[in-house]
Amino acid sequence: MLATVAAFCSCERRPLNDPSEFVQILVEVNVTAVTNVRVNVYNEHIPVPDLTTDMMRVLVYDTQTKNLLSQSFLSAKTINEEGNQVLSGPLNISYGNYDILVYNFDTPTTQVNGESNEESITAFTTELPPALKNSYLGRTKAVDDDYQIRYEPDHLVVAAEHNLRISPHDTLVIIQTEATTVVDSYYLQIHVEGMQYASSATAVITGLSPANHFGLGLRETNPPVGAAFDLLKSTDDHIPGENKDVLCAVFNTFGKIPDSDSELTVTFNVIDIAGNLQKFETSLNRTFLTEDAIERHWLLIDETWVIDNPYPDVPTEGGGGFQPTVDDWEEEHGEIVL
Image 1 (cartoon, rainbow, N blue to C red):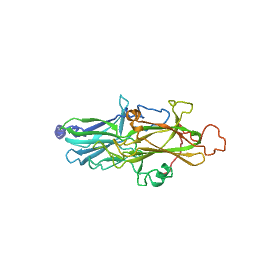
Image 2 (cartoon, helix red, strand yellow; image 1 turned 90 degrees about the vertical axis):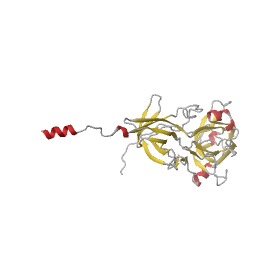
Image 3 (cartoon, one colour; image 1 turned 30 degrees about the vertical axis):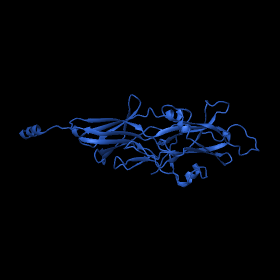
């Protein structure tokens, strides 16, 4: 009995984890001001990019050498009072001064490399393979063969904290930060006559930024690249007259190169109902200087593209083969054998 009492008195009740070792980070994903996605939406009848995320990567850097010290991943997600996503999780760091970068880790086309150093980390997209490049360029040589046409980027939301001080502590330390996108969304539109003859349509815009050095907060400017994307059929009630048909799209880019001498052009390609290519190319230099482009990222081309009837000797009725719609998902249930 004396031994039991002595053993009981010598015990110290402690938590499983020492609170002094805990640093937690909360990242609010603020995308409320993304033009053409959440605000300044010109055409509400077409899809917009998805701005949700399920995982974020946290990189902790030395403030002097800028070298990577540790990393962690955040997947616990809640929604705050403003309706924004908040991802959270622990950081494996002690007290000291740190630079911290956070970005969403679930982007299919936007890739990140150079993460071992804060000053070299870069977001970019890869170049289209030759066959796909030729199809977007309309099977003809619209630009030099060496000119890069890349996939359009997914939105990359980034939070940065520089020279953040973590003092010695004996309670839980919580770091709160805010992530915003480093990618722009533009709305492109051209008025069309003869929409009923179009089967599919694509566009390529040249003169855009190829990458973003988001550790430095700088966009790459050399060399300029092109972005390729599909177009949708829609209408614009602002256009005077009976024909309000337009080809349009919301596309993503790392941005227009400021004060760039590179020629900004857009190439539209339509495969008509006979399987023939019809092509239209125009300069975007003046369009990018308009108030709509600067303030709202609307590229409203003040021209009309006439798509020719591939069967001029055959009478046609109204309607057309190119009428994309967005339907609800169809559920299918079954078993997958692994």
